[in-house]
Length: 178
Length: 364
Image 1 (spheres, rainbow over the protein chains, first blue to last red):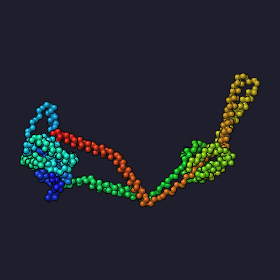
Image 2: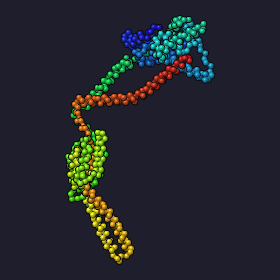
Image 3: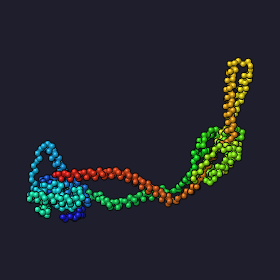
Image 4: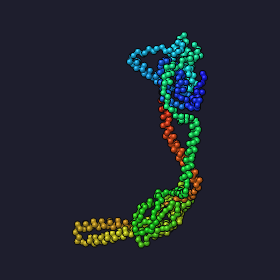
């Protein structure tokens, strides 16, 4: 997988005029990456849209603190997107606990349409959010192991190990489905 | 499906829908970013620069302190050499002659000050000019003298022996001797009794045995006490004689005789006591007491070396640097545990948060 982050960091520090990039240009450039990341992470296109929007709203508020020398805009946006997704997962967990406590039936989730083949979508559905996250970061966004490790808070070796296991489980789910 | 196919399919995921794109484009522009930001901290680079800068700052401050505090004349006090303490401290007093007036200020450590006394000024290890206070020739005095004499180590024993000879040579005697010579140190304490008329010569002779470093003379008038006792004795004798004369009368009634005999016994007893006290007073006024303490002379203290300006500067700068290091060490000792605790808490909270997120995602 090609490493684009080093090039991006260098480019992010300077526009062609030598100034820091604008928020609009950064948002335009990396919107698809953030959306795809959240799409694979949550397996819900509508939710991914909402979370993407919230990610860029947070980015807007934190834009003054962004330092392009410390991380590329894409890495920074992915970190924000991850936090947004985690917040959602936590609130979802609390909601499920409340429903279980109230003995309410869980809402039946509609089958997502991610634009993937049905068997891949079914296999993805059987993976945990942690596995989907690592696939989104390393496979979909093609982030390097160091950046991925920094984002999810593990060592690069652990990140690579998680990716291998996620891919292995994905293959197994797909083979089971077959 | 192979891994490569999975990867290709995942990378082919569609991008953000147009509605989302419009929503993001509609976000307001942020306020103008600060173009200047704090420089990104590179720990290694910071340490590489900050550490030598801190050392240079500390050295500069020490040098500045040394230069500022070493300026001008400075009178350095000579170090006081070690003294030998014989249980009494070296004392200073006003110079004065023995007289009938009461004494003055400080209480000497050798004994209580009562009546007449004279003290001589002292300087540690500075030999005194021998000067014995003569006793009164017309009145009865209790004469007490204390001398502290420093001698060479190998002359300690001979000096003590010589002191005893002096006392005996003047018709006196040695009341007590205490000689102790452990290792390189040594001391000798003598209590001499010398006829009071010879005490001046005896003291002068004793002072020649070494370097006198302390001297104390106390003269207490005993004449009044002696005369009082004498008068009381005379009165008692007269009284006793009168009683005996009355008891000799044959016509004395029995009860009167008994009473007079009782009075005679009492008076006789009082006369005996008073006579003994009178004799004691006379003896005290006859023999003077001289306490001599010999001590071993120590090696002379080195003359203080007067440092020049550069030496003082370096010395002061060195002390300042040591003080800085001490403060740094103190700060490290105090701050390090707190910093370690804070770091532990921060890392602990982060680790707990990561663990919680991991469990959350693995269960989702």
